[in-house]
Every structure is written in structure tokens, then in C-alpha cells.
Length: 210
Image (cartoon, rainbow, N blue to C red):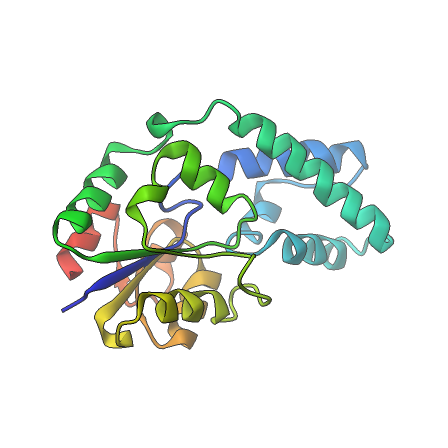
């Protein structure tokens, strides 16, 4: 029996990927760096620094660290501007149903997100008060697919790994969950990933594994 669920955030609890994509796209355009949706798919599950490192390597860009930092800063400013009017309505009915049902069943919940804006988003949407532990970039050094972020969440919850379940939407996250030794439900692109423990089409299916 599962007693705790560890959620990724972007693409699982909230749909911020379109905001991230447009923020990256607009920023890269200003610097003449080609970027499209296929490039963004490779960003899923990675921290902002890891995303920047990936695009520099992939596009063979000659950018010093100061320029890379400026690009990431400008991207984040654009992203936060788009978040300014977010509230509980930016969380789907299905997610609210799952979160409230888990709370009703006394299942503990943790967030494990690579987003530097995780706490801001969780607070603005009202999700934060349902969660017992937050594992984010303030607590970890290694980005997914390294398991550190999930291991921190697991430690924070205090259950046996067999009693925990992770919910992810990206292959990098699936690999991180498996490296942590914890079963994982896979949504979206992770549904089709062959190493996903429990492929699910809708987040409500998480309740079937509790």
C-alpha cells in the first residue's frame, strides 16, 4: 500500500510548459539562437542551468558564462511576468480531485520539481497548503535524471520506498525515479517511455495505485 506520493510539477500538477517554451523562444530569438518545439522537448525535466548547457552544446554556441546567465535571467523574467495573474483556476479539475482525495485518505504528498519557481507557482495556485514537503532547487544540487531531488523528497516524507509513488511526465524524471528505487506513474511523453512503471493517461489514474 502506498502511503505517500511525490509529484513533479510542470506538466503534472500545472501546465506551465507552454509558458516555459514561449519564454525560452522569445529570449533565444533576441540572441539569434534557433529554437523550436523539438528543442524544448529535450528540456523537459531539466533544471534551467541544465537546459542552458544542453542548448549551448547542441547548437555549438560560443557563449561565455556571463551571457548564458543573462539569457537565463531574461527568460525567467518573461516567465514570471506570465505567471503574474495565475491562481487556483490554473490547476485542472482532475488535479484538484486527486490532491483532495489523497488528503482525504491521509496520503502524504511531496513536490519534487527542478523549477526555480516551484514555490511561487504552488503558492499562487493554492496547491502549497496540501503538500507536506517541498524538494526543489533550494535543496538539491543535481538535476534529473540524477535521483537526488526524489531522494530528498522521500527522506522528507519519512516512509519506506515501497510505500511511495512518484508521478512524472518526462523520461528524465522516470530515470530519476527509477534510480531512486521508487515506483513511478508516467503521464504525457512518459506514458510512452518503456521504463515507466505505471503508464497513465490521466492523473486521476494515480488513485488506482494508492
